[in-house]
Image (cartoon, rainbow, N blue to C red; front, side, top):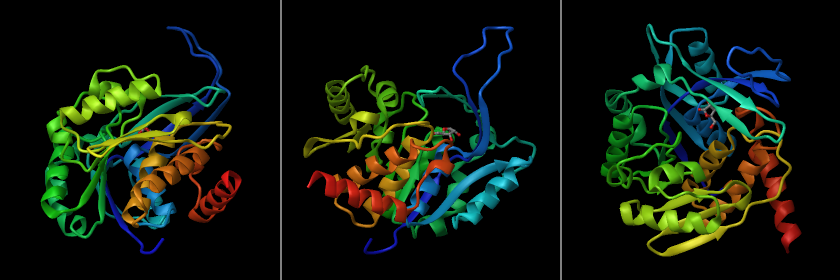
Length: 313
Ligand code: RIB
């Protein structure tokens, strides 16, 4: 990396309550789960941690509750070397939490209770302007109010700061307002929520991406899990292949992709290589259990990247 980029994340922080199980109870039924893990999560926080582990300087703009989880979340940011000076505690509100269920295939189901994340308002973005102005890239998701997302995108464009919008959890958006972002990066289900086109294959992703560009998005990257990623813009569409791995837990893989991609792009990496690197960073995160706990260091990543490059030569 030629220079250390500065990434700012305006987004969510949750506590993840992960249960590993192979079956789900019917109404009124109690069953046993296999294992349980408590960890730091939230799409915004995860993306911040991934960018930091990849070597970026990272600042977080977020809100937590005044419960047990709030101070612990702030401590986790500080421990990881992330600037948490703009992570505010909201009195009388719970922190964001996410009950998550992971099957033995590694597939997950996630509920998010937004709590204090829903109190992150445009005023908070203004209050953090002195810090945001200095960022090379601002990264956003949809676990905070939409008005804050759109406001931050306009703020960043007016200041000439590049942005990534990860439209997760999936929901329909005003594409003109979302199109202020330099990159919009959905997975298959989020792309479907945005474009109204089912995405089950590479061809579906192509059709959906074209529709999203027509609707007003500038540049779209649809992440396709084991099928890699599809990048579409005015200059055409290209597919970037995934790296094969044996997944044990896919929770947070999308966040690993976004956070690492932000770091690689902002560090000046050419786009196709940055996407390929982010594909590998995300794939590696699926090989261990947990969300942030499964993200690898830059050192470990580079070793794996070199090995995979050597294998294709
Ligand atoms: O993308 C995974 C994340 O989604 C979890 O950490 C959970 O908190 C939810 O935000």
